[in-house]
Image 1 (cartoon, rainbow, N blue to C red):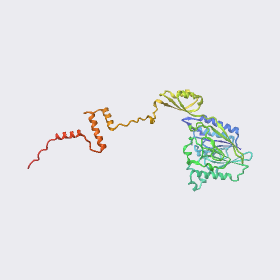
Image 2: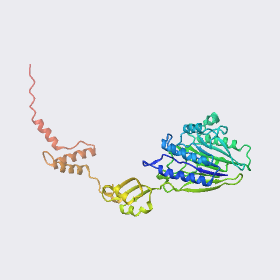
Image 3: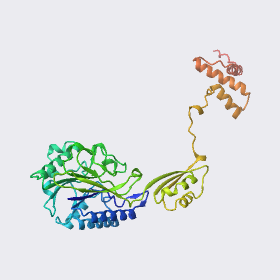
Image 4: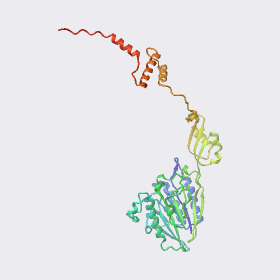
Length: 419
């Protein structure tokens, strides 16, 4: 039996305000063409079809049309990611009906309520697929949770769901007839992130245990954007995002996964490169150096930093002329004349700081004095400083002279009148 696995389209995602719709169209056409040529028995989209919970009409139509094309090739299961809307997925299922070839899984459910789906092949083989859409920390499947489970941590609660689904799809398992699959939009410990995922949903508090994954023939995971083998021993992959969504994904090769599976045999996993997305590149250097890089930059989406000796007018226009095929997301100027100098230990002047007396002398030189000499004012200031340092009364002969002069000017006291 043949499986096609894709994930994390993030339709509607912009980069520095530049919309990526043209790239999404090319990439979706690549995936549909691969499905037509490969002719899978089942297609799994492991979450984050859209980038926003309430996508625009254009983005909504783009995603629905692509999924309908895939469903025309083979039954297609789409599980809800943390960027997708569970309510929207439920609405789709109401419109399509449970018998349609396109299945939207809005939330984690017990096996009998849609948590495990079966798909039969013409040869008599049967795929049993258990799926766990993204689970928010404050929302679980009430119908299958005991009160004591609700009080445990996130990993334990998810583990309870996974164990229950695996137990159900393993009942009356026939190794000659059944193929067991697992699809999820979860963060598994040990996975390498791109730092472009929604950060609150890839912290350790949202990590689930790789060593406790269901023992299936293939596990189709979404949520982590860097394509990679699933940590642990269970065969599976994070299919990853289909274009480089932000600069944390710069340099990554994007992929779609196909899997050949037979009951009782290890899967044959094949990686197919997705070429339709534009590269994201950070470009730095002088104008001349940037021009020398033009051939290697091509039609990339670029953040450009230009080194200049003084401010340059119309810098963005000059860079665009050098990189005519590139999309400039932002152009920054690193002007040498405006750069702050960072001093090292060798640059610091080690002369002693001036004393209070020296600083006051320089102050007098700057402002002068109204009356009397600066030397006499400085002498008084020094006397006051010495008195403070020695914690004694200041010796100020000038003040004593003023007090004596003032006393000599007072009139003599008159004799007291007699009776």
